[in-house]
Length: 161
Image 1 (cartoon, rainbow, N blue to C red):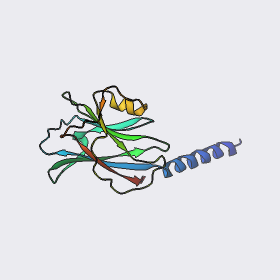
Image 2: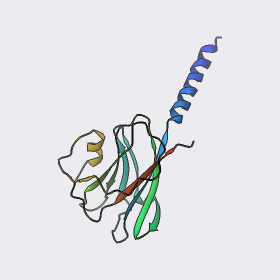
Image 3: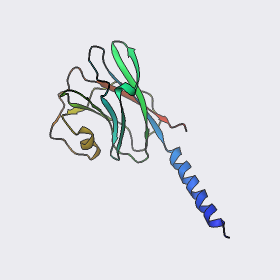
């Protein structure tokens, strides 16, 4: 029996997985809102890229109070080759628009310290994540940002397996 070929294939597969993992980064992000603003625990917070999206609900994020704000924190893995990044906040109840925070992350990310808190780049009444993912300009997009909007900050870290 010739076992050299299966062993070579296995070795190549292991090297490929390790090389891909070496390029992985983790996006740590926090969203905050003034304490007086009621936030539904089912509000979705999604990381959206040109290749896909992943997210969570506010009630599942780590919570703390800080300087008059409720702050919610979590992280998400970043895939190699993603070109566009945004955080999209979608309220679960009520007619509030979706808030889109376009992030300045290079195609080849490098570890970086916390960004400054930033307001939404724009709001959109529906399908904001889909529009961002596919590079579409939604018809219901506005830069008239409500005063009670969330703010976002983020940092990039090397992924620790």
